[in-house]
Length: 127
Image (tube, rainbow, N blue to C red; front, side, top):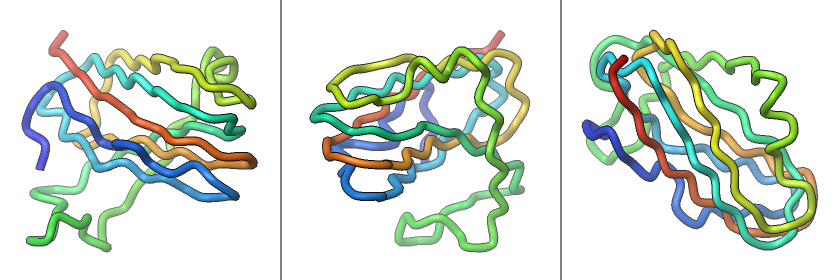
């Protein structure tokens, strides 16, 4: 479980075909300002989204996998995120959220075409 304010929820995730790369959930611990830095290689085309949950207690099984009964809600990306999506070239972007009140957050990347690798780095702070 992540209990730090810095975390790497996806390390070298494979972006190929129509794959979906789901990041390890990050516990917000009351932090209201959240930042994800995405760094990708290759020539992928796809979409980043983020999911939140207020599931009580731990959400991890003893093997580190996420409990299947956790309900995730996909956040509506702000309009400014549209320009930050992978569009056929290597790149990076920062996705910032202010005034978060959820307990857990995780990044999701859905590839549409081409290939690459993705790393997400998370940081948060109290406001």
